[in-house]
Length: 204
Image (cartoon, rainbow, N blue to C red):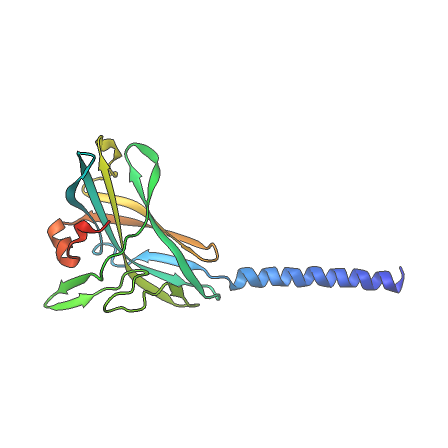
């Protein structure tokens, strides 16, 4: 084998090795999302909203409030692109995808003092950043609100078992990363929710 052919073969091998190293670094350094409910027994609620109207038909309206923590275990900085709720419905095996709605910061009375909470992706009067950026090794937390409305046959209602609704919460980042967690919603009185977020029945 001539020196020219040896050099060409060496260059090819080095190019392949370099490409493999770059691929390895990409997967090693990418963001790695985690998501978990915060106080899963206390801060994940579903509730019945006042009935609505659609083309002179009464509608059944349901709201969902959840409080979650989201982390980045990877090396690369990233930002959330979406956070969706997937709700089981009686009439179909496919889960209904719900998009979050903008709400004011929830304010909760706790043992004589008032606590305000941030909302995912929303700039509020108290939390002014609306942070969705996830630094390496860091996390964010916040509330998310979802609303769904039905009319006609109750087979389109969410699956409710002993006043509990289970759904999937799925997050995605700008690089295509994904994480999900199971949310167990307990039923909450609408009066309590209205104190937490006034006029929530008008948010659509």
